[in-house]
Length: 492
Image 1 (cartoon, helix red, strand yellow):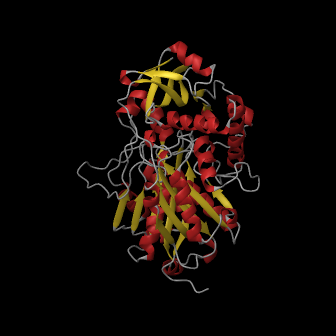
Image 2: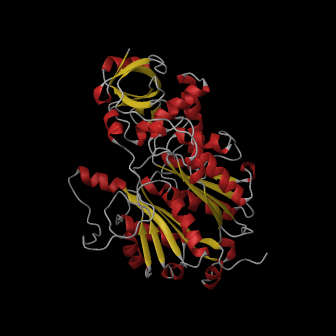
Image 3: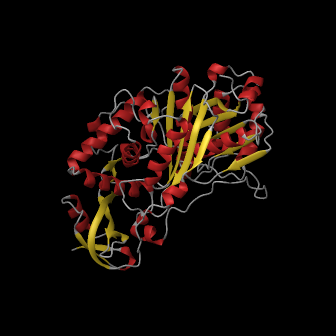
């Protein structure tokens, strides 16, 4: 088949880990440069004309793409620095493919990095790293993706204001709909997470390659404390990493002119993006994601594939509930031995460098596909509280009709939602719940989603120590609580 010269191809995919004994310890932009050099030749990198990076939390930049271009000897005509969200790398790649197909840009570098361990270690010592600072009068890079606020006053007051608290709320909803006991469900998710760990053990790029049994993952210990019921530390995304990944895309014509061997090409076949309601209180169910279902099915249709036709999968894996919901919506079995739900090992073990994990999953997917010609892979990306989603299908074989992307948000928006009522007070039943622990491993706060008599949803916190402990010794779901001012609830 004759290849359309404008077909987008992924020609560079590099990753690096910076361990504590590295010398010198690089800042985030220098770490991206190292990843870029690990994945592409200097001549390819010098040809980059557009640099698009995800937001980095380890250091403040106004236009890191400009700085990266200088490090690589490139002269980008456009730079972009997008807001928060784990969907960012796949969303950027989808847009880059469309821009390349339309001739709007030629060679695009996408990526990001975090040097969080160094940043936090120095902060504890009262020190600030001697990393490159850009002047305050430097114009900021453009941002076409933006950041959606994750929390409002109700989330802040109730304590459901961070991923480590919200995803366990989803987890309890999954358990309740499955009919499992708490012990049964804890074993099930630990077994799921042990399959991710097994992949990380064999992944040269993974941050944590220590093998863990399901029992070790589920059992609290000084090194594996409970964070928020039912999640131990090993079930949480691990952001204490020093990692970078870089992806380079161009057209078939340019790849040939740059002398990149065709056996190294990976073809982005199709992509989609969509989001669920931004407020978790408005979601019809806490154990489902219409956006994953609709956008996931759409990307497979664009690629001309069924879910069983996809050889490799990487499901975004910040927490077990995210994997279970995505797998259910996509029709993926949870424990299929010959097709794990990750190629990296997931954010707990391979590493969760804040917004940039999916740059790593795409790079690893490309490596795996290149090792297995004739195969295809699905990458899913998730930002917020299972909120913003992006999908990509990749293959070693070129797509018959070029890269395809579809708008799916309008279909998601037509679906019914729930009214959020955060001024409501009174008595109603708990819909889902979790308990947050302090750093010493003691239960601290009960966090609940409550359905009012009118069918609205509100969020609240249980702060009485005896009632919090009672939540762990009983089944709070369905229990009556009284929600008062300040979103504080009491059982009974």
